[in-house]
Image (cartoon, rainbow, N blue to C red; front, side, top):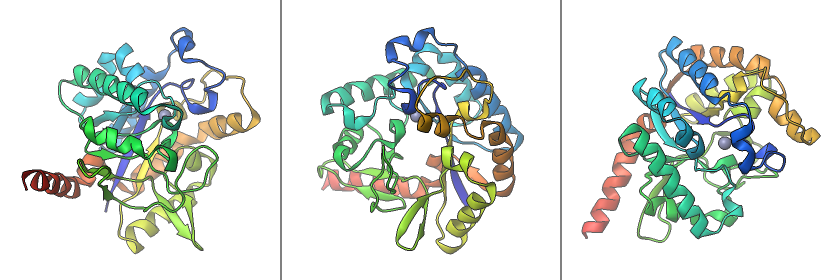
Length: 291
Ligand SMILES: [Zn+2]
């Protein structure tokens, strides 16, 4: 079964864990490592003949058109990771619409064609910010992959549907939601989708969970990681103990783990894994528009 592979393209200092320490105004003065790290990701994926979806931060795309063009030219899907990595539930709907529009335009200008996918900074589409899905649909996105159906201090909708579904929002526009993968044990959803969870837990747990999803639940996994996660030498940023733990633990093991995962499972970009479902959802919207 084809699983969905995604890469959230942002630099090591742009993550939510360091939001209070590294301000947006100071991003430009930090040593940038995103270009080099993303090239390493591209080479790694080439080695395994795998294509992925790259959710690109608008700020990064604006500074580095060439990088986004290279990702696209090498056959990967480009999608949006917003502009400034601000959490959606900390924004007003108006701010969010402006940010989203700007981020989409920057990326589309760089690659010369439309994008259809969106992922929020730190999965910040929660119960309080579900309104953002209507805005995403209105701004031309066909799918969102931001809802994490788990309980977490910063994100998550614990009882949300776990697999691909269509959200009708305000009844005008539909958008497909493609949640990050979880496994359900004893009535609770546990994250198994990549990133920090993949880095912190032993490899075998993800392997087992992926197999369970594919073979028992007959569903693709939606997996993600970041270019900075394969960069153990990145500069260290002073932050809380918890942020440090989440960001820096096992960076040196990540590439080995990814190699193992890529050799044992099949992956493709989100728009390819869900092509038939996305096409039928768009067709359904067009039909209801015509009616
Ligand atoms: Zn991010």
